[in-house]
Image (cartoon, rainbow, N blue to C red; front, side, top):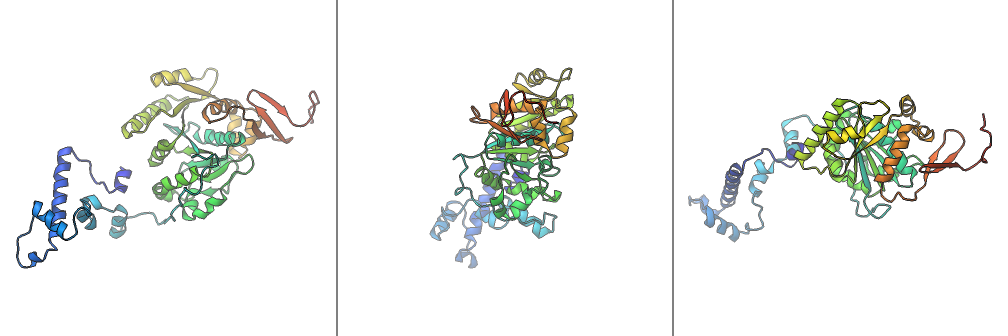
Length: 383
């Protein structure tokens, strides 16, 4: 409905109702053109049908005039401007006025193609989207991709806090001053971060400018990992329509599985392709109520993967903004997510994962094997 309103569509009509409305609009347009004829001032009857069309062509108002030009010019049903109407009628609307985002044609992606877009979504809140999105962005950056963590939980997103970048540029700030996007870049092993709007009331305004912003971001990075909110809205559709792959989380609650099915029904009604979705059962552990097999059966055989339960360590370190420490200690969640991402991200074969260690420098690790740069094998561990 928000898309329809933004496009000036004010009703959903049957075929017959549309034909009648279309005919009436064309008749109004024809009469509006003929009303400018000098003959009308002398009491001459108005022309309609072929006579009106011929008169309009003679006065240069023929094929170059849109069918609904008259209605649009007069604020008719097919030419409504909801934004202008809200301003004229005194209706409440956001005071934010965003500057136009520059085109991306002059800024090709680093790899020569648009970024790989990976939204992390779920059908309900509390499934672990923010944590999984933050860790996914860190893994992608560690694998050598130029990565952006985009927080599209536009109302309550805190992904920038989870990765330890409390002063990250916010989406509304970037839209107000597009030049600030020039400074948006990864910092070593930490991906670039574009945080949620600082003011909740700006969320609707951000959605209106989101398509141009996403075009710009896709031209600047190799991978864009997007966190999303619990309540499905317009921003979900925008991301899912552009995604290369979408990670759909289901946690251990039956309600999460039911919400997942409702979300898929919504995608079907909206015409959003679900082929790129990868379903993941989160917080899997021995004795957990749901496994990837349960999720797959509930979704009629769709393949699903498992993300292991990382325990209280995940909450402690992510809440403290220390995700690199969580990855370095090989937490179960991180290890399972790592293997999932290797299968998702393009060109992962042979890439080396570089990550920071909590204490003694850096470590390079290929999946399944690890080694330290310094120290000899068998040396005692320093206390």
